[in-house]
Image (cartoon, rainbow, N blue to C red):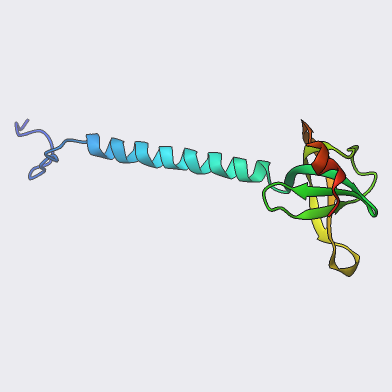
Length: 123
């Protein structure tokens, strides 16, 4: 049998070794996990509005804290009362005459009560 040098002739291993490819894989896995976490948060709060429920002449309205928009709440979908500060999940739509409507499907969180002034004032 012949004796020779093991391995492929002419092959030279990288000077830094193989560790840099492991680092690149680790960065890729970390980025993917961060992206998945962000996607979860976006999807978890998709269609959710947080704000105060107010009584108006036309019924109950929800004032979105983040966008400062007022939505007429469709009656009977969930149980909320004037003065409640809540996070609701549901669907936004345009009602008759282009009025902003919100059809809640679920109370995600009851965050306590709004200030007395916020509960009384109507938009």
